[in-house]
Image (tube, one colour):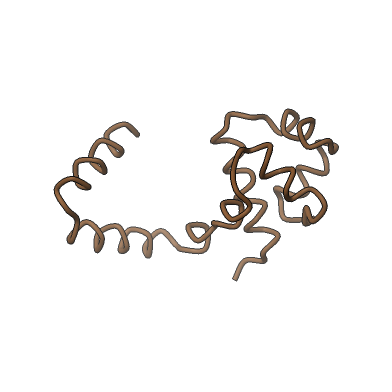
Length: 105
């Protein structure tokens, strides 16, 4: 299984990109060198001293930083979960998921 540093780094990179923030911008917001942020995102180092600052800069909770379950699953298991979920979904939620998927095209 992936190391916690690697999973956390992937999650930070994912949240940074979702926020449309460059590595340089986030590094400046949290007052560290871009190289240090790169090492965090690559799973080389753990941001123990800057964890709360990173969460604040990305406007997420600390818990959200550690929400990387989707990084631990392989594509087959993710598809199986989605198919199983869709077989028991309400019409209301089906409409929401349809619009979400359609917007991704």
